[in-house]
Amino acid sequence: MSRTFLATLHFDGTAFVGWQRQSAGRSVQAEFEQVLERLFGRRTAAHAAGRTDAGVHAIGLPISFPAPIKWTPDALRRALNALLPNDCWVASVRTMQTGFHARRSALARRYRYVIGTDDGAASPFRRPFEWALGRPLDDAALGAAASLFRGEHDFRAFAAKGEPKPHYDCTVTTATWEPREGNRGVTFHVEANRFLHHMVRMMVGTMVDVGLGRRPVADVERLLDRRDNQETSPPAPPQGLYFVAAAYPEDCYADVTGDPNAALQSA
Image (cartoon, rainbow, N blue to C red; front, top):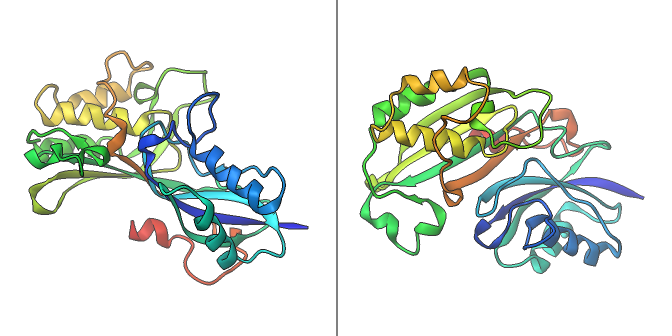
């Protein structure tokens, strides 16, 4: 017999091709599933709340998987952290109800994007974890542009071209910029019910062009009315992007202690 668990994973995405297993390159999913196979003695599928691109980081990616019923959350967390590579770390493990799925059960997801506008952003201790822009941005223009993304919109202009989707509608509940401590730059916080491929990076790339005075704030509204991405700014580099958290209905949790939305509320 088995039951479903939810692990909250942190990882440095620098050396990964992303979460999803690929035909070539090192993926977070492959590393995680290899550890599960070692622990359980059989191949075990792991499902994340969302995909990440190559170079994108996570500080709270939920991952669901089945495990033999003898395992406890604490024992699983210790075992996972003992076997995962040094660029991955499990912050917590919780027991979930039967039928729970990290992606399909999610109500919302949150990302953040970090930009360094000072000279220190070029430091080798910062460059892998933020966009080392090294130029000042117009904070008011950034805020005005971000406000236009809030609400329900068709985001196909901010999505990488790929296989056609049933729809491109996403409801953005949070889209705000805040200054970083020490005048080191700015951080973009965004939460939505769903995200399209490259959506956050294309939003940030466009807003940075607005903040640099390369295009007007009104372009964001105009792009949201387009049905292609031909006039959207290039996507921001991946290393500044972090998957922060996902939220789930309270009844998904088999252990009812704690607030299931705390990760989103505190991020």
